[in-house]
Image 1: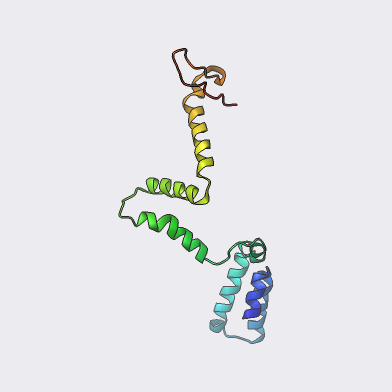
Image 2: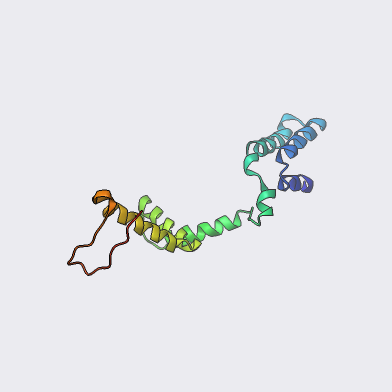
Length: 146
């Protein structure tokens, strides 16, 4: 079993699946006894494009579900279990903002969001996208969006 697991972790899922089926055939397992072997082999072949553990491990990425479960708990459960009732749309908006904050990308996103709102609400209403301040305005000249 350890040898087959190592084979999957080294990126040889299809070879492991073939070996499992070959072993079941050589042992002349009954259909009932062989069913879990075939099911596992089918899984390895069907999901082979996603079982690139050797690449993920080489990059130092986690392959276990614990990291994902922890992130879900941090992003979803801690917020959604706070007793608030959320619509699906509202919950998704909150989760996106929490994900941006947790990843450290919030400030960059917020600048992008402000730029898009400026384009949509101001620049789009002026000829050639040129926004000029009025004489009465004491606000600094608004930046021109390219």
